[in-house]
Length: 418
Ligand code: PMP
Image 1 (cartoon, rainbow, N blue to C red):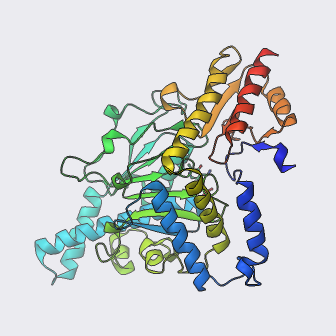
Image 2 (cartoon, helix red, strand yellow):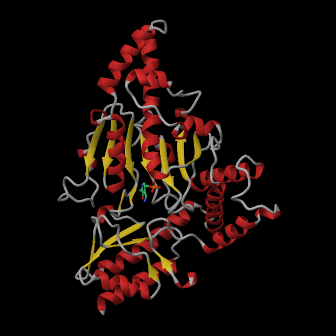
Image 3 (tube, rainbow, N blue to C red):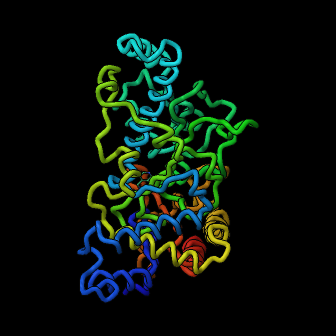
């Protein structure tokens, strides 16, 4: 039964049982309305309340200043955000260049403005990607696919100095950042490779005047597990299905500087003239923001689950994300310590400097098949590594209780000794 199992799958991941019990009831009859939460209109007042509460709780838990940032519920997963980040921040870059061109040559001669803009696009448009694992690689590839390789700069490839494999974060002094890139992208936690940035990359920090690069981060697999300096980011995003809730809703947190009236996305006509791709409407942040995430039908059930997870986190940890951060570190340290105690049997895949607290990837030199079989037999499940890399992966998300991590650490020790 559910109570006998600790599930270490990488996503979809374990959800707190009490949240699921509440959600199960809400699915049948939400708050005595006689109608389930998945049946109510997304345009109803109760749906709007669920959205607004989840937004406010998320911002409060993570210390995101809502005067400066917009929280958007999107669809299309982390993968959809690979594309959305490109469309929207290239659009913002074009809007800035357009303003500069108009300053230079005036607003009257449209053809001249377009010609000047085209020149700027060809010579100056650059998107920077730091590739540290399979997911940032996919995001980089999406930029190349949408725009063409001439616009995409590979700031660093973690495989270069690491024998062709992911597992290390390249030294920041070697990063080749562009001047005024439309965005600088990185993945805070690489789910497949078990590589996590130890903190905000200093090479991307704002200068003394407060301005810095336009930083975009994929936080799909470590959001809600540690504090981060929110105001250093222009955009961060994450799918819900690991630390936040159920599959089907994706969150984007965007600096309001990139939304109207501060930034107005270029028209499709202008983009066409510039040879740049036109964003699908559901991936346009200004459309989603203007409609409070309800431009089209959003799964309110998924937002509800996310909201319940946030409420539970806020109840459990009076010091909010800092409390969860301490617990996450404790659980990860337990598991890594058990692995490190038996270097003859286990080899942690990533370098010590980049070990993920969320996805603990290791090889078993004895027999991985036996490891999986015996762990499953005692209720430790979902430990098989990603199909592209093999090995073992223990995903240590927020919903893994301390006892679950302790049980896994004990098993790791016992298996090695047996
Ligand atoms: N980024 C990261 C770090 C991920 O772990 C995943 C999915 N595991 C994705 C992006 C892609 O997310 P989705 O499957 O929701 O598109």
